[in-house]
Length: 218
Image (tube, rainbow, N blue to C red):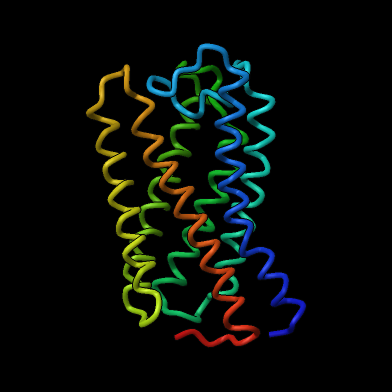
């Protein structure tokens, strides 16, 4: 691989971490500009709802999060395509679809107001969430199986399994927790995904650093 192209991938490898940081920043700063916001009862999407007082500041951070996230997963897929095994290749491709769906879907279909007003736009927002969840869970499962098949990266398979368990728990709690604790379940899902993305980002950066311009993966 050409050195310049390799250096570009090294830069892109950190975009996953940057994206996760920007996501957490949108939560932190969004809450600062949303008086009375309750993390236990409200969804994170309320911070970027059209009528939300924190929409403008929170949307700035989610925009950069989306750009970094999409670029990272596309870069991850392009670089590792066919290098580790088919499971990782397919999983990274599904992550690309998830990232693109999340970025454009939530950009064009934010909640109309905090909570759920039931408008067409709100319904589309929920539909986007359904697709994001499906692609995310599928990707994490494939990554778990793919990394467990390798000699040197089984620990990433274990991390993937742990992430899947958190996603499963969060998904189950959505239908169990009372309304006054509604905000807990999606935070388990989203925050675990952000941490997982950051770990993949650091792993890719370390891998590129250790392997130079070599393209074979053990």
